[in-house]
Image 1: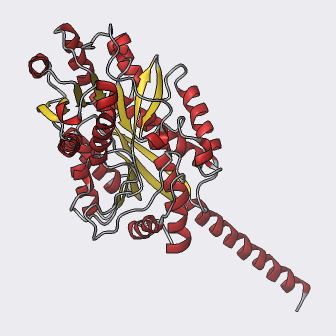
Image 2: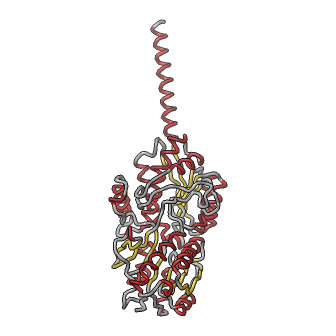
Length: 436
């Protein structure tokens, strides 16, 4: 072969190799997972905890973007505002799937949105990773194929609330559980109704005397009639499930009308946003309770997988930069922890074991997750109920804790295994709502 032919052959080979390299590089760049992220950034749910959930999820998504993605896949989030409206949440989910061509959906705060949105996403055969919505109605007896919730189920909130009060009935209130008068009040959406059912079941189990059980709309401009009913019922304990500003409205009107009670046990959502409680109620936010998965900043580091405490510190540092001076609400850690589980357990397994990021691969990967207690930043483990179970897609190892605000600090007071201190019960003499 002549030198000229050799030269032309070498040149051709180089060109082909270069072209292949460009093609491979382009293909590598095209490997990405597009994630639709849906939270309420406006409307009443935003201040009730959804905006903080968004912050937690965004911190975690940004962290993995900076890490270069997962298993060769770049992460491209597309954020949407559900505006505290179920119809908007559904429309945004459909838009993200059909127009933005996202591979999956992550987030969702309100159970009233999750119930219809989950059904729609299931129809679209897209994977849905719920970081928040707690209502049992989201999953119970629906046998959804592509919808998973690492979060606690709402029926456990009422269990935690009533178990704590029953445990301390004699020592703190000086009454047997059967002599304890309790009122159950809740917003009338899927979230409030579900937690209210848990309160009702727990009250029945412990033999409490339920003197009032009533729901209300979070958009109600006036809750004074409900306060009047509470005054007439004279409960020792009020179990309240709400967002905000309805919590503030109820408790302000309770103050104005002179409602007296032994304890106000709030149950998640707006009660887990202490800054908002303090802003709306001032010193009356002291001694209120909330029930949710534990704040990641209150978990015992020694009980966690050793790789998690540095991630918890990172989340706190990033949130402090994002919102200087704001309290580190439990909501931030909930979304961050649940998102972290997706990026470290589900996504890499889907790619490596099941060959990709479609709904079926992600579903199979989620069902394979098997984390023991201490395997998440929230302290609990992860194992999802299979499709034939009543709560298919629910993390069966998740549990909530009861936290009380004492002198502007949050303390885990129940269950005893996680307890940092005993609860202050009943409300101290001289405080606004105290009946002592």
